[in-house]
Every structure is written in C-alpha cells, then in structure tokens.
Image (cartoon, rainbow, N blue to C red; front, top):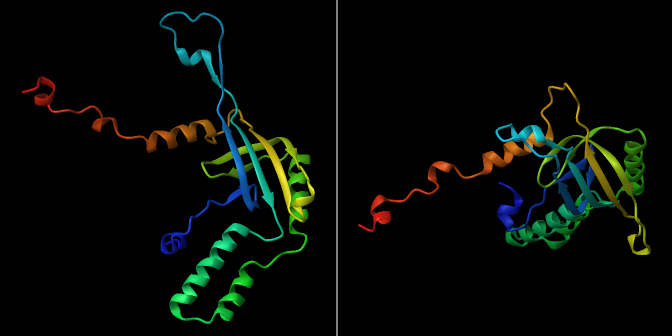
Length: 203
C-alpha cells in the first residue's frame, strides 16, 4: 500500500525528461492542435481528410536541486516522524534516519543542467513522463534556464517539447495513444440515457 494511503500524505507522480528525474514540476501545458482546411468541403466527403493532427507539444517548467526528489524526501521524513511517535521510537533515531533520506549531492543540479543542454545540442529524441501521460519521440524546440539570486544552488528551467512523427514507423503515435486512454476512461454509453418507460410516459 502506498505511504500516502497509510499516512494521508498526498502522493506525486515522478516526472522525467529521458532518464533525468525532475525534482519539482511547477507547470505543464499539454497542447493538441489540428490543421483544418480553410477551403469548402464537398458534402459527403470524409471529414477526416480535411483535418490533420499536428505533432503534440508540451511545455514544462521545473526545478532541479542538489537533493534528489526533495518533495518526496520531506514527505517521507514527516511520515517517519509520525510512525516513530506511534511506535515509541526515540526522536533522535528518527532524525538520524530522516537525514539519510534527504542527503544532498553537491553539484547535482549543475550536472543535470549539463545533461539537459547535451540533450538539446545533440538533437536527441526521448520519452517524457508527466503527471498525465508518458510521451514518446519528443525533442526540444526550446530550452531556457531563468536565474535569480533566490535560486541558490538549484536550477530552474522552461522546456518546450514537440513530438517527432516517424513516417512508416510501427510505433504508436502519441495522439493515438492519448485518444485510446481517454476512450478507455470514458463512461460506457450503455448506461447513459436509460430511463424506465413508466417515467417517460408518466404512468
């Protein structure tokens, strides 16, 4: 059972760019866009022939720190304190265990900054894991690193990513996969709009 179910702690979905773990995703924008013909369409012709799915786009704002998964670490630390008090474990022992959870890795944020830049420079295509979907065949269209004094040793970034559609590939496209996920999560039409005849006729 997840720790969040036991202690009432909100859980979070781990986000990744390729193999790079993001400590905190501050904002995500998922963009679905169609190219629709501006010319008149003949009556009876397939409407889908005049609508083209454009590559999916994703914008992400996140933060990298020297403490891996800092939010999860703080939650785990709080859970350890609660469990310790329930089991009668000395606070000093709980504090020692919690410090191991939140151990810092000096230079980690700068190292991951270099990895992100390398992904951009090498024009790599990679998978992206978000709170909504895992996107396949994504690449950077833009990568920014805003800096201010309050950031300290952490790194903030803004990434604009776009799907690379591979022609003739057997790999399922993001658009098809997301559409299937939405369809599978929808209510069954068999249970919609059913009403006893007596109610309709007011019998």
